[in-house]
Image (cartoon, rainbow, N blue to C red; front, side, top):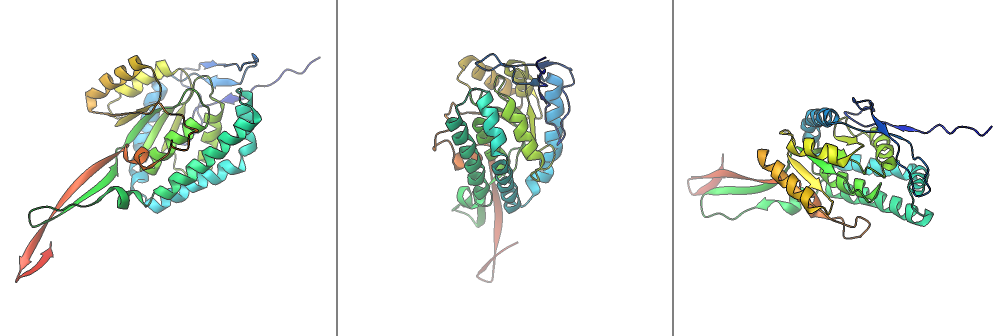
Length: 293
């Protein structure tokens, strides 16, 4: 008798743990050959809410860490991904990529993590500064993280789109809730396993699998989500997100991007999920000398 294959169950990732979806639902996407890829959790709106709670709880500690330390952790993610290249290449091939394309996608994903790791402790110097003002004040502009960022990951890629959107969000000091690619979900939860062993505090990154249409509205309307990153090309969906975002003035960032392109990385992906805040500090003249207090 032929042996019955035991498919892997890919759980979701919330608060540094791997629970099953609270709904108990799952789905089994198939590749071009008609082969089932695994048992994938079909997340619900309750899972979205749980993930936002975990992300909000983790945000304070993560945003207060030294930027250099955040860079070390992103670098560590790249190291761990490097050590598990073979597994990611295999999963990408299962989902329809050729070996050459899979190897290239994993290599670009690793390099992108290292790229954003290098930016962590340089963002403030490059994007902020001292502003000239016509009064006796020092005037400083500094970028600060927004808070909880909802990410609708690229639906046409399994790994590179996911990494390219998570890395700048957490490099900025934000926490995030990510909706993975619905039909190409394998690398998303395997990447969560990498995050879980890379010194990333639980809750900083939360990854959900399932229907984008089902989860996007609960995430876009959630009052404790500060920004939404969307990569799709559907104008109606984008308009809906923008309408939902008005309720609590969420920032909406739209990147219909080819994430394998060398130009699909840059400082603006970090600063787009940061708030530029300005501080005025008075200067006192004492005996002809200038001092601040």
